[in-house]
Image (cartoon, rainbow, N blue to C red; front, top):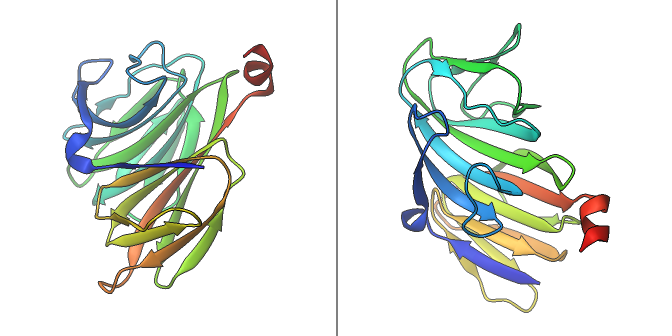
Length: 202
């Protein structure tokens, strides 16, 4: 198993595909990939004004709100209200989508995977006690949305995640997620699986 800490200050700043803002790229595969050739990508963005999302045909997307008073995500004719610490929303990256901000700017967390190459799942967890996580994904990424976490895995030392830090894990193994004494924490878990077609072609 391989574990790599991704510190918030090292995230890559990149313009949005549609030029409407700036995103913080937390992780991408393959390393150094651009917006048109990634297999999967995890990022965060501060959304200042209402407007359209960038279009990513052939990509599956999941979105969670990290901060702000709320976003109405409009995909086609469907509008979904997203809230900080609320449910995650999954949608087609190639669909026409826009953000409405009824109460001002927000910060979001975004996961994208290239359909036919990778699939993903994004889960939000609120932790107030130690918990063991078991993954069967090819790649998992733990993002500390708030609070402070200590992550331990057999054969590895403890990894401390401050707010906005992340940990990328490759290879399935039990992970003991332990809280630091600071109290409750919020965690976003990204699980990524190679598609059968991609795995067979390599």
